[in-house]
Length: 459
Picture 1 (tube, helix red, strand yellow):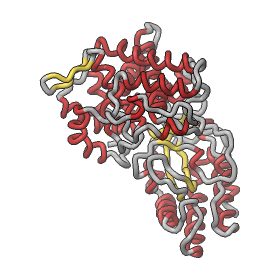
Picture 2 (cartoon, helix red, strand yellow):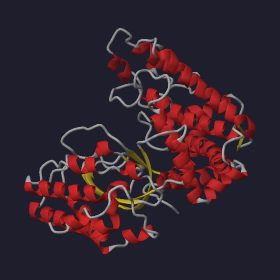
Picture 3 (cartoon, one colour):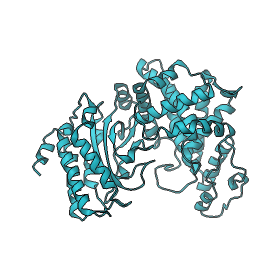
Picture 4 (cartoon, rainbow, N blue to C red):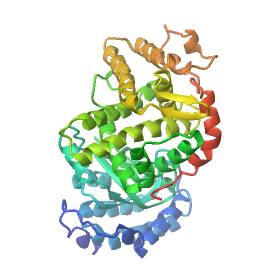
């Protein structure tokens, strides 16, 4: 197509920042692309192939291609990727609209190379969305990089993470009108699995739902927030920067430390409480590093301020939103929140007295770090233990703080220890660690607020 020369005319690696990011979302070409992508989804099977009107599907794909060509001048830094994207759409049509293969365009899309605040990208792939659609349907998303200078300095120093790309939504199709807050390449329909080089997190969604849920939780529990924490609830941009810093450190932690081989990333079937500990370990590492930055007299003032806010974000998101979000079926993030709440209560740092929640703020950092140290010690011992022994030790760590279900086989020690590991996993109840009476009562009041955050962005 003649327009491909226009797409490739930009200088790759020199991202364009347009002052009004919302202008791109208002472009007629974007609106046509979004409408076409939304319609073609209704014609697709779970694997992404077209099962409906093939003629209509082809027309929609040609509409998407034309829109990409019209939007390309706004996105010259993505010229190679957009050209490959058009080729992948054309091949999908030529191959009869079977299972889509967008490997080539995915490999050309490298947002981690242009981490510049305000840089925008157009993402169009057949893909599933975590916490959204489980089918590989066409999704179209306009996004904008969030990369404040203090985060760039952290990443260039002790907190390197070349794969991490924090984003903000400009607009999206239905797969992201959900709780989905990540954009990761492994969800895209493709012919082979490459080594992935980036992962994006939507800090604006994280910040917006945090602000709404925590404000409601603080009102319900009559928790008096410190002035710094209250700032987070009043300022979306400040909350976004805070979550970017948290996510930067959290994300890199998954592959750092004394790990039991590869505790999270390898696709393996394990009791869900092990995933709880891994996600919590990464969050508590972010908390601990934030404390270290605050206590270091050489930390720049802006970074020190955001590091203090990271501590509040980790605590409040974990104990309020994480604990009560999602079903009670193997909810590993929920259990992590329950564990943190119960630990702080049993350390006498958090109190629920006279129907009011209170926290001894000056004791909070060291109490949280103590839990992080418990998990680190578990991991350090794990490399000397067989798998079943590590699983049992992990269960003991959790169950000494969060009470298991009375019917639990794990709690009773009624386990087939001479059987394959999958039988130990099968013995874990879906809700092995039920909500406490406190969280049951809080959940009745807070659940509608949490549900209202599906699809949220800035507000």
